[in-house]
Image (cartoon, rainbow, N blue to C red):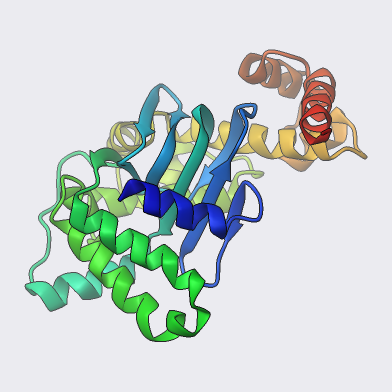
Amino acid sequence: MVDRLAAAIARHSDGRWSDTAVPRLTVVALEEPVAPADLLYEPMVCFIAGGAKRTVAGDRSWVAGRGEMFLNSFVLPVTCVFEQVPYRSAVLRLDSRVLADLLLELDGSSPRPQPHPAGQGIALMTPELLDAVTRWVRLLDAPEDIRPLAARTESEILYRLLGSPLGPHLRQFALADSGTARVREAAGWISAHYTEPLTVEEIAAVAHMSTATLHRHFKAATGMSPLRFQRHLRLQEARRRLVAGGTTAALVAEAVGYASPTQFSREYRRAYGLPPAQDAAHLRGRMESAATP
């Protein structure tokens, strides 16, 4: 059954990451090994039908492979290492409102807040869930079926997920006033303001937490402190701009919020192992080599 899902993903991938006509569905297909990729995760569940991927965020990492699913509840800067290829996955971008409506329809109850927000999790796909995800992706084979069936199939997937080991994570995600929701709000706010000089006190006010509580919950959920989270966002965007070319390290440093080019170069080298310009040239060379038949 996993092979059916992998085949459906491959049919509808036009590159590494492909958004689709099905709402909230992205498909990922990689044929050859690629360099570790810096990505900004949204809240999502990744259903893996082939290969294996390691996700690294701060001091934490997770490895999920064929037949498994990985849940992330926050906006989160990560590094992805595709440890086995060919790699195939279908990604469901989570909508807290859709999930909350389903929970109310099912039992009208609210999940109890947990003392530590559970930001990520890995579990095996059950046969029933795998069947639902496969039918969801295969809607792309019949575009006329997407409008009447996509939302129903997504609801079935969420229903199956709620009964899985990831169910408690999802219930916390749907709860408006939980530690998970407050950390998610803080992470989203940092993502929107990462080029600005932020303080822990400002971020704690957004999350309606004390600074100590914010630090504890934020690190438990993301693997890093709020200000380290901000630094990751800055460095990821800087690397993207440098690889695109047509600029300098000093200009990029200023654009992502660094007052000191020296500090930017020091932190960049600590994160990526090379000075900014040298790292960008190295990455462009790898990309050009990969594109050459």
